[in-house]
Image (cartoon, rainbow, N blue to C red; front, side, top):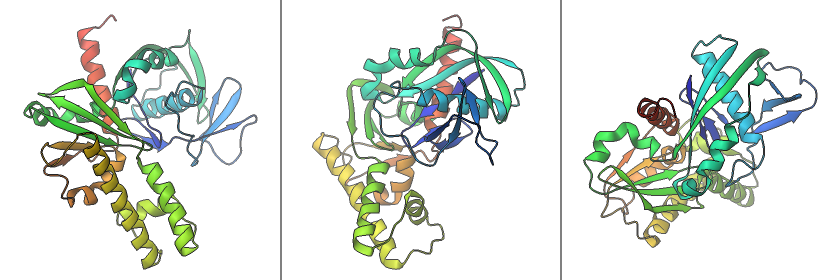
Length: 306
């Protein structure tokens, strides 16, 4: 079974699921919930508190544990009830880190023998037969093949949790000589807004309050707090575009495709910016995972015995 996982700093996403990249470890089985992963003699539950940012996600077992949860969720969605499953993983890395960390990231998931765990009290036994690693952001635009193949030069801007990654495609091919990353993601923006609202309005808010405002959902926040959130968000969007110009990425003279969950939140501000001439937006936050699956299927067809 091919399973694609996007290991984001903000959330872990598969084709059909998305959950916050946060974990709580327990030495005894926690009560009042059935969404428990049991592995290696320990119990794990998802947490709303995100893991700390890490450039190298192989530093500990956290992202492996999150991957087991993602695998169980996808197997459940696919109706796979076999007690044993052979899994092929399609995953990705930011393009700037791709060359350095690709092999290490693949080896991180390749464990000896059968991996046994339980999720929601259901036992799983899997072998991870193959791990394929692809460039993040590029994967997200794979379904947009007509658009990228018809553009001699187009930038991909992936606004993620902690970083904004920029890629250049020339006639549909990734130019690995031009991969950049800015430390200007949605998490850094949210942290700044939370501090600002607390300082200006003596009010405590969190990520969900900010998302509610930016997505136009109902909120009981007062008008001045909403104004602070939207004003700070516009400033953050402008800051990303100005940093791009400093990197010689001028979106007034080059088309762009914006991907990632952060781009969805910032879309109204990007669309109204005079610094962007022509932009397309990939609206699915699961776009990288969907692209990994497409690239994985293609690679397995080309090299079935690799």
